[in-house]
Image 1 (cartoon, one colour):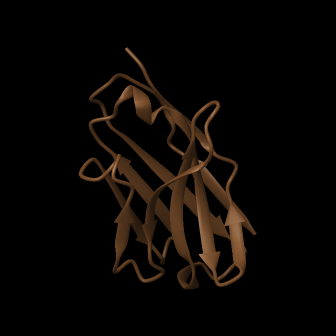
Image 2: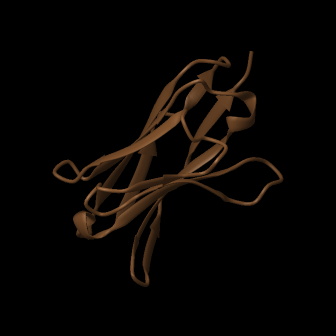
Length: 115
């Protein structure tokens, strides 16, 4: 079982990034997937969630209107399109797959928003 995030980096305020999460080793299409983030000194924060079929999404108020979560079950990938990035979006971003009591986490990818 593996979740591998990619796409993080250093960007300036107002710019965009697209994170990817690649899944392997389990039946990905059964799992809801969420993106979380954790800034230094803070707890892990839920950013966005997408259902297993991709027919419903939810977002934290802090990212609503700027971030979009999507998935491609054929490719076993989930994406987080992040627009209009702010310094407060700086964090390690984690991918989480959940199906009943089964939870899997990726290793995280660093996003830094700074001028």
